[in-house]
Image 1: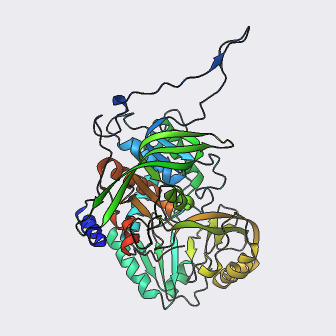
Image 2: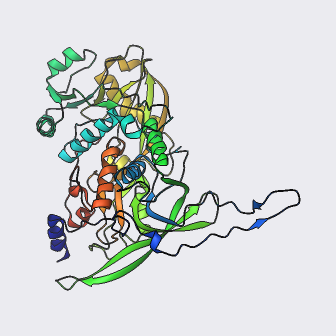
Length: 486
């Protein structure tokens, strides 16, 4: 059976693959190909210099070793690490395709910017520990000559997770694991909670966990711009457009059980230019699907999930857009400067925003109340009905808060187990995933980018073992459930 073969292959690491070529073993050998010369039509006018009739600077290149679909913080991190880990400077041509380079609707810029180690899976704790070290030393990684240093405005105020009597045992077990992995988290009784945070009402709280270091929040926009600036300085090419088609080649093989499996390889990506009917074909060796909330649609373009139901060919990438609201309110009598990012027993969260008695927060809706993701309109009634009553109950001072603004953004929500999808597809052999993080992609971006780059360049995860997050788990039915989704 193919399922058994997949389990054995994953156990032996047989899905390992890497970008292998004749130029030092790290990129596709375009020197060995006959390059096609672009022809530009030019005209000469009396008294004028030669001018091209058609400017092609906005088009992507005809060839790229790696095409990254999605130029948000995850895609940029992959691009950075590919260039950082290449065997020699300029060895890999990386193209990032992003639909909107203003990032006006990008999940990165609309995030509340939190980073924590308080997860229920050790892999997610490891990702956070790697990423927070990256952020603390951001200018060592992303510094650019003659550019001002980056300031992520990191606020190390920690996360405070509250648990009811029902959830106390789970919280305690999670903290034990987090400490074993290397996180510094303490448990607090209701009495200890009141002593440290006297503004909090501990009714219904049986236990709390608090991050003592390397937790807090930062400016997502600064990280995105820092990654983009550094990637450009390293030679990464950027293109504003939309991937609309993949051209593939295929070959079939028969398993030991007699099942026929078709393996496909993407060899050309079609990029449609914005506000135009034209597209540019790009030859490539590897495609990275980092399209966030829209990565499921990109996967379908490659034929993923279009086979018979119940087969590997018919297994979809279970990632879809989920709209989340964030509200900003003012409360002069609020908790003040020592406020951590608090997550209540019912999922309502808040944190301080700046120094002017402002706070941001919200909560995820119930499964049967998911808002339509067709746009980013804000439901203000959701705050009044679902958020504010819980805020006022937990922090009595919030009874008199005043909402000043609100916005909405997208989660790249993995409906299978709310965890990331990282690594290659088992049948579309040169498409790699970096998506599905369900709200914690921003904080894990530095580590995920390195993991994907390692898999592409070396055929295996080296820094952090991300094999539980491979696509194959969707077919095998092996959920890797993350319980601490905020």
